[in-house]
Amino acid sequence: MIVVSLFNGMNTGRQALENCGYTIEKYYSSEIKLYAIELTQHHFPDTIQVGDVTKWKEWDIDWSKVNLVLSGSPCQDLSAAGKRVGINGSRSSLFFVFVEMLNHIRTLNPNVIFFQENVGSANVKDVGIMSRALGVYPVRMNSELVTAQLRDRYYWTNIRTKETMFDLVVDIPEPKDKKIMLQDILTSGKAITNKHTCLNTGSGSTEKSSQRYLKHRNDTTGMLTLIDENGLFRTVNKIEMCRLQGFPDNYCDILTTNKAGSLLGDGWTLPIVEHFFTFLTFEKSLESGGKKTLNKTCY
Image 1 (cartoon, rainbow, N blue to C red):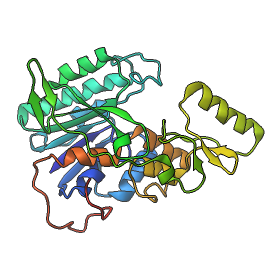
Image 2 (image 1 turned 135 degrees about the vertical axis):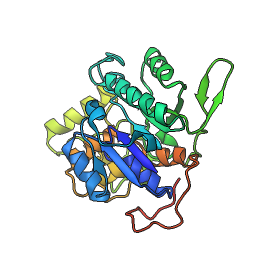
Image 3 (image 1 turned 60 degrees about the horizontal axis):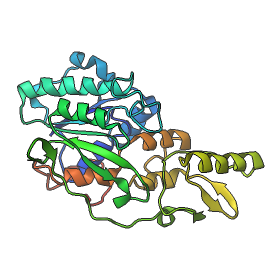
Image 4 (image 1 turned 90 degrees about the vertical axis):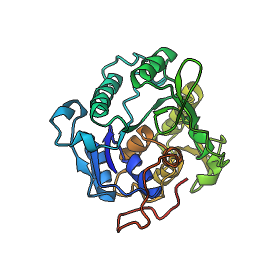
């Protein structure tokens, strides 16, 4: 399999493919954040870094042989947590670069598979624009089914589709609910809510000003999940953030907590992506071939 991954982030797509038993011949990663590249190369040093997605026409890739294109185009202009500028905003409009590239590959390989993710809070008009550009309407899934966090997302893919009366839609069923609660993944302390609401880092200081800030932000925005640690509030630590996205505890050990939180907060939920990839029809390898994996079964 030859894969092109745009907005590659922490390389969840590659890890999911490896976990599901697929052999990767070449994996091209488009990413500009340096510590995201550092983490990717740490786990998969054979990754080919190609740089800025807007310069894709300059990349040395045989596009006719690309089997799979992955895209997690920026959500900042679409998310309810942002300014809701929309799909034509300066960051989220990079989605159209992905579409341009995909359409080019389709002229050479009409059977190319794609996978695109974006936030569940996107405006219905923007979802429609993206769907018409890709030729398929998405399925909406929440990571709460497979992890301890609420993470509502749209997923567009041609891995498996079905025709309705008017449109082509993604035909991937929801995964079985694992019923994982926030308390189940904590290293210590007591969860105040059943699920984590927004994956981010914050202060765990015992100072009164810090405690007031955490409580105020949680009460007014709902975008901060607090944990009771012996009567004091804290936010999730690095290990817990990895668990919330379905990664092993040590996956982000080479990064600071803030850098890990940035990547995990912007990234994909590993077991959700694995679930989609179980429906791929590419031939799987019988052996790992020495490639670095997590030694776990795909979802």
